[in-house]
Picture 1: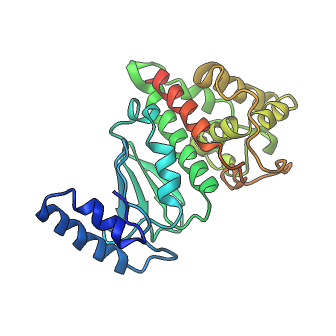
Picture 2: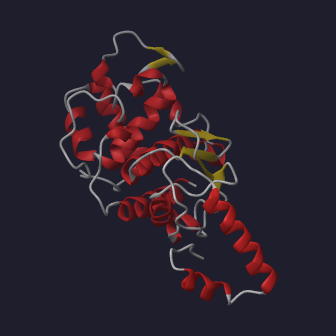
Picture 3: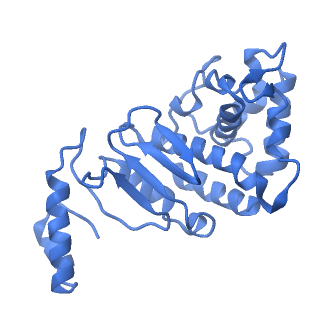
Length: 262
């Protein structure tokens, strides 16, 4: 059901429901419209295969998130692989913009573009693939340990003589988990750049090969979804804007990848 500017359209939709249900929805609409979010008007209420929660509960979906998240999550490619995947949009969260914990993801409601929102979500899904999907079916040792060992002696202790060019981004060099998630994101959105840079760095090449051989297979080869060329040095892959109208293609393929890992 949609909350639209047209009262007539809304009333037509409510007329199809039982009176008590229609009254409950009208009351909820009133609460949502009155809530003063950071930039928002309440735009949409929708159902997706993935459970989407808004925090605080009285808040409305921030402008732009409804359409973006709906297009990302409503397809059968996610229904089949992440049916119990809870996603929370926290309209008050500023930092971190995304967080994966206990097989759920929280996103900040203050991101301004669908590009950034989608890339932060992919980054968090990278953590989920790292920590949950690659360890399924009792795989011992953990496949991710091979990736970690390329640059890390401990989770936050870098091996000697590892250069900045061995990482997908500056943020990737903060610990082994961000190393994985940033490389995961770079591979999906900017595969051509990742492959080219890997040719000039042995460690980065091994990271690229890990994702090619053990995670993605033939998916995402040759992608260059960026609007402009990537800078030689970047801190955060999720900040690089991508071309519009590419999200469905990206998430359809990602859903298939996650299905094979599961």
